[in-house]
Length: 125
Image: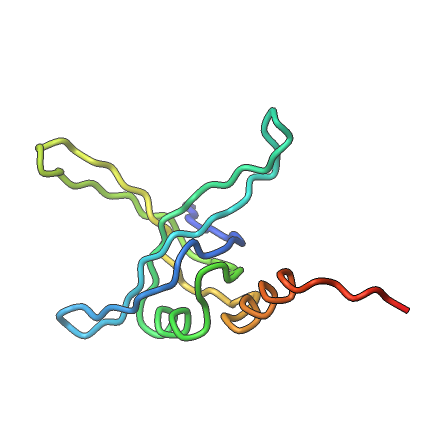
């Protein structure tokens, strides 16, 4: 029995742009920053930046409700591929093919959180 299942949480590195294929299929390509479970030698968290692709309703919902900095959860599978670049060099790719992605916060929540962080805190009484 073989299994190809990916589940992760991370943040979108930029705003999403919904596209349509020639056959009318909605899709969105995006990069998800996922923190590693360990710190580097300087005591800082490092992240992996993973290429993801979502189609149809999942792509539409992601584009509508999530933007740069949104924290999302990904469920899907890995898919590898390759292509030849303009110099004829073979480039290998690995993408997360997203099956579902329930948002952990929305564009609005992310923007409000950023605004709250920028505003001075009032002392509690």
